[in-house]
Amino acid sequence: GAGVSQSPSNKVTEKGKDVELRCDPISGHTALYWYRQSLGQGLEFLIYFQGNSAPDKSGLPSDRFSAERTGGSVSTLTIQRTQQEDSAVYLCASSLPGRGGLYYGYTFGSGTRLTVV
Amino acid sequence: EDKVVQSPLSLVVHEGDTVTLNCSYEVTNFRSLLWYKQEKKAPTFLFMLTSSGIEKKSGRLSSILDKKELFSILNITATQTGDSAIYLCAATNAGNNRKLIWGLGTSLAVNP
Image (cartoon, rainbow over all chains, first blue to last red; front, side, top):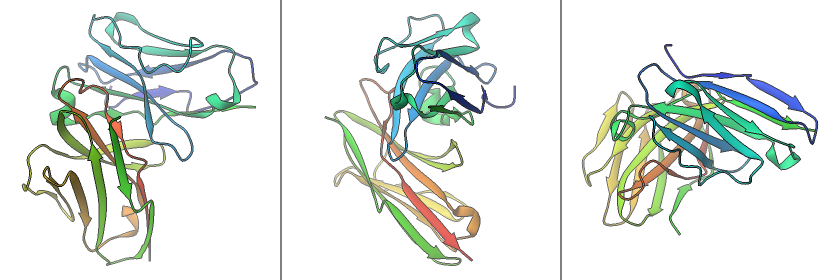
């Protein structure tokens, strides 16, 4: 696609429920990142996928968070047993591999605003 | 611990004013500094800076990096209401450049 597509754009869920957030990166961008932005906070790195390599999960805040990327394209971020502190905007970004992201920048999706009530 | 600090946190100006946004960093094995503009939810890439003293320009926006004093500035001249946004600064290090270290951003409001 022309840009990074994320869905849903907004999600309201009850505490304790599971949610799935989807990211469809730009075609040809083998690097995919998930970030989280809470109110008043900077962008927080969550997870990084690069091609067929093992993902870097070091930013995931707890074992309730997981992500997968199927076929090197679409990625799903899953949050189990959601808590109110999970409320944030979840941003997905993709870039060209290797140093492509540094030289050409990262393209962000429009994000999913998650509200846990 | 690596960190990026932006100032001011917020700024209100009138159309036509010139603004300077600041970004200082403390990053081990610093490699590059990036500026993004965030409107609504998605940040859009503005500049990447790796060398000191070389100004990058795009229209009314320009940015420069000082690797000795560990800071960068983003200048916007003749501001317009469409410049209203959060401006984010991020740094990368040579060892792990996939995890950008982000500042909290400067919220800029340009009033007509």
